[in-house]
Amino acid sequence: MSLLKGIWHFFIPRERTLVYTTFDQGQYFKVKGLLTAAGVRHRSRINGGMKATTQRANYGGKATVQHDLYVRKEDEHRALKAIH
Image (cartoon, rainbow, N blue to C red; front, side):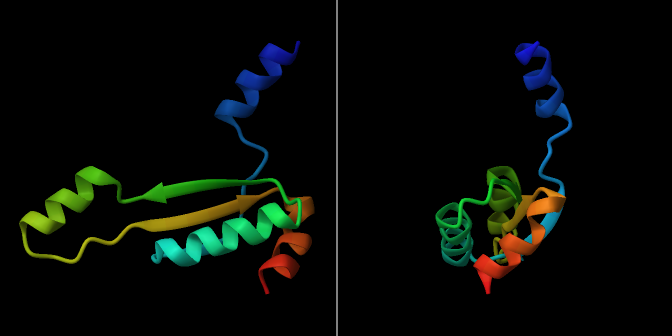
């Protein structure tokens, strides 16, 4: 049963409420550390990986990577309290 549950949560994660977005990697790690220290389970999504970064650099543009942090709906208040 736990194998099926694990597969289910892989495709449909419990952490779906967006609580933080940044383009600064240092800020991302700071907030991620705050959530971990507060015991809030979270999930990250990083948009604009290596392929996008390389393409922008080739055309002279600034490489931007977006970092999003998601938590469970019931943990949203705790997460926001830990961040601020």
